Each structure stands twice: as C-alpha cells, then as structure tokens.
Length: 418
Image 1: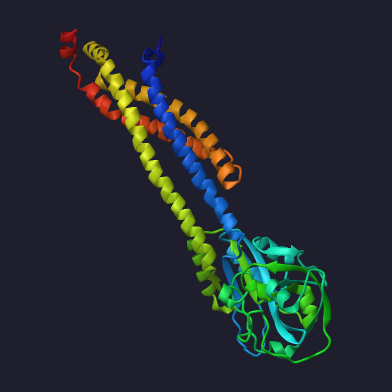
Image 2 (image 1 turned 90 degrees about the horizontal axis):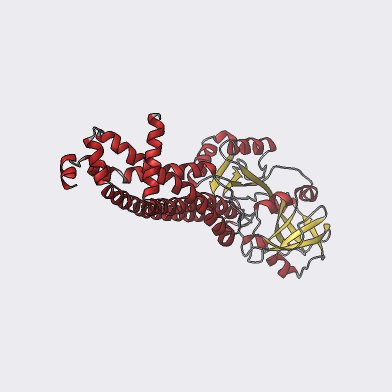
C-alpha cells in the first residue's frame, strides 16, 4: 500500500469512526457556506438590479450646449452628440435621449414644446405614466398641466403655431426628463407659469394641427411641456438644429459618473457642459452602500460562528484521539505528520460543508430574489468556488489550535496512563 493511499485510508477511517463529530463539523461548515453564499449572491445581484431600476427613473447624466451667442440657439451638433456618446460609452454602457426645446403658441398662449425621439425617451423614462400613446408623426404628447389648462383629452385636436420672435434669446438648460430647472431638468423661459404658459396673450390665427396621442403625468416639471417628434418640431419651426439637452442613463457608479463629467467639462472646445442628476445617483449610491455594509457585518458574524463551531468540534476530536496520538508519536510519528492528518480531515469537512452549503445558499438566494426583489438569480460559479475555498480555509484555520495541543502531547505520559 502506498503512503498516499494509507494516508487516505487513515483519514476516512477517522471520519467514519467519529461520524457524529464529523457530522457536526460538516453542518457548521454548511451553515457558514450557505449563509455567506446567499448574502454574497444577493448583494452582487440586487445592487445591479436596483441600479437598473433606479435608472428607469430618468437620466443620471445630462449634457447641454454652451451658447456663445445669446441671440440664437444652435444646439448640439450631430457630430458632437456622437463624440460625447462615444466618450461616455468608452467608460460604461449608456442610453441616450435628445431634446430640442422651442416656445410655441397654443390658443394665443405660449408653451414649451420639446422635440424628441419617442422610443428613446420612453426607454429612458419608464416611470412616466402615459395615458394613451406616445406621439408619432402628426401627434403630440401633452403634460397633465397643459391638458388641464387647455381642456385636452386623448384624441383631441390642437393647433400649434411657431413664432421665431418667441425663441430669440431663449435658452434651454440641463436636467432630467425634459422638464424645468426646478425639477432638475431642462428649462422654460422665466415667465412660465405653473401650467406652462407664458404671461403673453397675443391673439394669432394659424398654425399646424396635431392630434393628442397621449397625456403624460410625472408629478414634475415634465407635466408643463408639449412633446412632439423632432421631425415635426423641425418642420413647425422651419429649421433643423441640434438638440438642446442630451440625457444619458449610464450604467456606472457615482464616482465613475463624476469622472465622466470632469472629462467632458475639461474639453472646453466641445461647446458642451455635463452634470450629474443628483437625485438619481445619490439615492442609488446610498441604497447600494447600505446593502454592502449589511453584507459585511453579517458575513463577519457568520465567519466567527463557523470558526467557533468547527474549532470546537476539532478540539473534541483531538481529545478523543489523545491516546492514539500518543501511541503514534511513541512509534516515531513526527508531530508534523499528525498535524497534517488533522488538517486534511478538517479540510475534508470544509469541502463537504462548502459544497452542500453553496447549493443550499443558492436555493435560498434564488427564493429571496424571486419573492422579495421579483427577478431570477443565475448561479454564480466563480462565487461558488470562492465559497467552497473559504469554507475549507476556515475549517483548516480553526484546527490550528487543536493541532498545537496534539503536537504537545507527551507519549510517555499517555502510555503511563494506559
């Protein structure tokens, strides 16, 4: 029989002769591995899901044009939109929506109208509550404030006129969701009232007829704006120009977003400025930080309990085998050989407990994510491997003290007692 085979037989024999103790060590390792894997899996998957959910509440990064001539708006040129997007996507995946803002006349009163790509804006602002449909060519989406002021319903016809004099010197500022500065979004002229109208009442006939496709209710400044396709607004204004606001939903942390903002703002030649939307990024960061802190606190407690459980069990096993250890040392077995056997035995308990615990932890994590957070959880194999290795390491480290006691056993004393 080879030395390796004899060593394996000794380990297995020691395990089966003390099955109850071995079972306790395996259970301790299983509970520890299950708890650690479950917490780690949830704390990895849930923040990712929460980040995605938070980004559905609007943009977390906004880019606006820096106007050099206050007498007219040039907007952000298409090539600059492409360049800015490439800069952002070089650091993190991002979704983009563009807005062009102009003042229009409806029933002789002035309102802010935004030219948008409905598909992009819908994707970026999934929290918008829209009654009816998003606008297509020849249609508009109106905010609830505008609909209330004008008595509009889905399917109503509305005549919109454009006057270049209304837009001379007007400026659109940055923000989220295409609203006003008070909502952290775009901007309307300073004379805008609570229902989106400017205090001007010049009666004028004419304009272009649109059908109201839907009414949007966000509870914010977006409710004061009329939305149409960019193509329709270009045709109404009789000119094509760049967007006033670029809104991005970037899959990045608050720190990375700040880095992106600094990179864009450092290039003054770009003619644009960037800023983060604090209400989105701050909430996201705080929630994720709380989850991660909770994970580390509970993990430390679990590691300590697992260490104590395995260590206590191994101490009991060493005590039971005291006479056997003394006899083997009397026959010439070195202390290192005895210690290696115990380390291998504890590593085996850690391996069995780690494998069982990882499987149990995945089941618990899957149930937790499905029931509480409403999404499925895939098996994270690298994390499973780490959990098994950690379980083995904890078991081995917990065995160090009992092994030192075993190494200090005096064979003569043990044999005299026999």
